Image 1: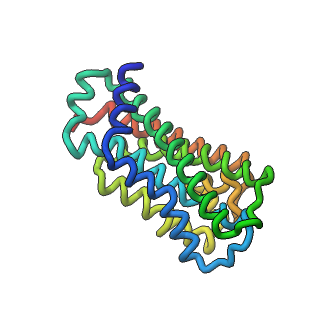
Image 2: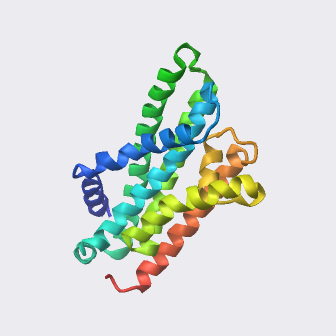
Length: 231
């Protein structure tokens, strides 16, 4: 198990692609800020854009799995490690990659927020709680993304789910049917981060819903991986 985790962490940090993927942690909040049309004149509203950061973590988690399918290297990994160890190692790599994504997003977006607000940047407890929520949400999103990768296996399908589900379905539904949308995974991640949207659940309930989504996806991914052929 330890060797499997070490191997997956080594693969996760190798290559320049990681820098490009981590850039999404700042580019996605920037896109939300630029295209939302909202007047974000305080720290709480600006940091609310970090709700897009778990999307990058989900994509990264899925990539860690689907690239092995894409390059047909999964068979070799299974031969080196037991299936269940490999599966768990990918989830651990997804969690740690998600945490790194959250750190990059939180630091990078705080810098952008400070440049925009200057002396009006709030360094109080509410800001730190939001940043801590970002790290927690991105960690869970990394595991969620890895589970999606195991379920779908295809890189393009997993990437489509990672980006299209939150922006094309969950976000519009949050404004049209908030009573339904707040039960969905990315809106639960946003609630965990204290995103300033009144329709979201409080932190503790959002965390519970997010954990249930991650657990359900991880269980489904494991069962499918155990039953399927490797390639």
